[in-house]
Image (cartoon, rainbow, N blue to C red; front, side, top):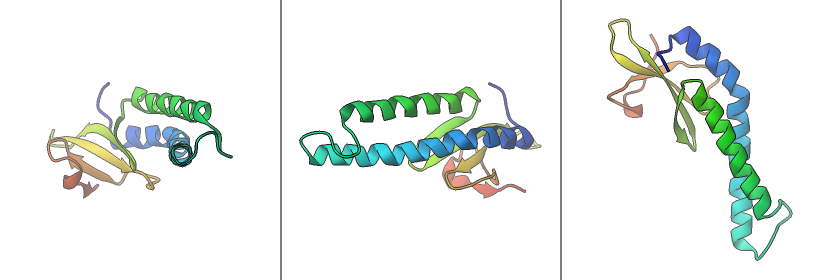
Length: 121
C-alpha cells in the first residue's frame, strides 16, 4: 500500500471507527470469558470455549479489515494504528492513532516509534 496524506488517513479512520469500537468491545468480552473459563471447570454464564473461539475468530476478521486499508496495527491493548506518510520535507513518518482518540492528531518519525510522538502541526 502507498502513503497516506492526513485527509486520507482521517477518512480511513472514520470508516474504521466502528470496526475499532467492535474490536475494543470483543477484546474485553474475550478477556472476561477467558478469565471465567480458567477459574471454572466448564462453561460460565458468558459461554464456553466455543464462544471464546468465535470471539477470537471475529477479532481476527476485524484486524484483517484494519490492515487491508494500509493502516498498520501496532498495538492490541490498547489499540494503536499507524498510517504511513511523509512530512513535507520527505521524512518518513506515521500518522498515529491511539485507542480513545476520535481523530488523528499525532505523528512520529518511523525511526523513532511511539516514544517520538508529537502533535501534528
